[in-house]
Length: 434
Image 1 (cartoon, rainbow, N blue to C red):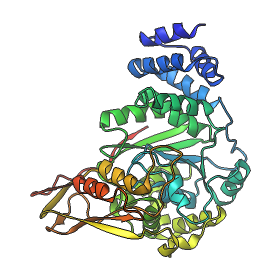
Image 2: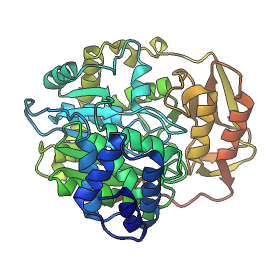
Image 3: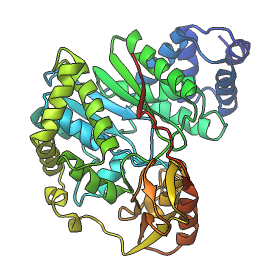
Image 4: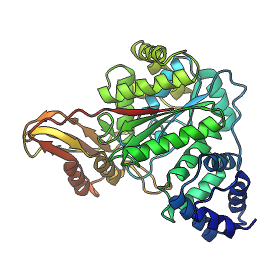
């Protein structure tokens, strides 16, 4: 078969066979198909889309392009959770310990921050000594002993995805729903999972701005899992305002500690409990989602989720005292208040603006190689629907350098919209898919 013929057929909206997709992916991974031809194929997919069968074949081919993590010797259903990225989204550090404390086996393969969205690994590495770059053998050992382990994706898992993503990044094809779905699912399935809970964010602070697109992405990922007999379920959740109050790595660890001790923000607590419940249910620890919700709630109230997180921090070389003594975490050297220009009701807080402001002062990165400052970020003092007086503090920026501080402060100020009437309440969990 010839690459140009496959590009031509995909461009014209035809369905390719599994064999043909394998030919393309394997040929590109081996360096036999040049960048310009694969770029043309990606653009054809961008416009023509992919069928469910094509999508399944593409994902399976990317999974088999490298090593797969064998967790079969560890008893129980292995269940992970993945978020498509949000602002202030630290639910993995809450839902995973709760699910593990309830009896689920949770191998958390996590990512880093990119752009204005936070990364689980960066939050964990704000904890002094915490190691995410652990060997496969150590990952298995920690998981077997504690039912929970956090680690980053290695280059050996789904290497075809890494190569294709780099090409998508420079050919304006990142936003293709089939390509996003196969990228996420190939990395997760290569990690030896039996089940996966997805949190697909939608709104100003999310990659997906429209609910219809978030739904299409969720449906595509659930369909991939169904084709290979994996239990996959997706929540579509609102990301028009930051989740919780804290945005920034060490600041978010502090809020995780508060939440696991039952004193966290209402929205963060609610979503974390629901994600934990879905993990418990898909992990076959409970027979119904109602029973799973009850288990998650009890593990929060009795402190066992909090203790589980401390236990795993110790196992991965970190200092568990940071959850009790926040002065042991990286702390900013300066704070800048942003005040309300007038009285009224908070009608919107643009999560994208808050995330970008936090990244400007060092909490995020534009490329995977950039260093981040774990101490900096933003703490909100209000949420959408709150009533404020003129001059009241809307949020505080915590910084260690004054570079770009004025720009960040202006961006944060622009994020808050104030109206004379209270806004309509928004749902946090918009849909369940699968």
